[in-house]
Image (tube, rainbow, N blue to C red; front, side):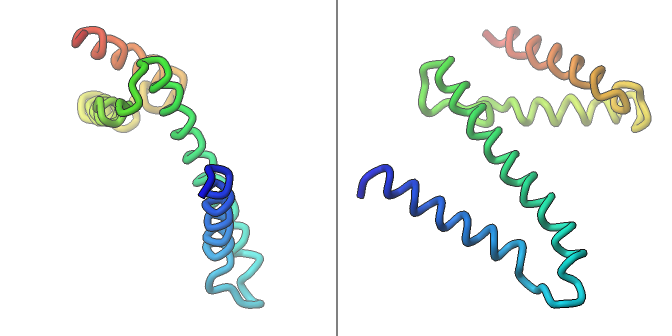
Length: 119
């Protein structure tokens, strides 16, 4: 089976599963409400999956290693640790959590600092 056929088959399976996710359990009384809740969720799933796939390919291209991913290196766990530490040390209403730009800058600085310390 060629690569194109595999991609078309996987795309078809994904499309069928997406339709099943959106339409399962619908009836005439709840379809409008259910679709207004399910379609944004499906869009978020597709967007997140695409972002993870692209970032993994970029990461593997930069490191010239097909096996190495940010998850294997523990960067996702480091991010969760940083967020948990901020909540634990500064509280849930801290400016570092409420202000998304400040949170992003802090996370990037600490993650780059942590990865530079290990190399």
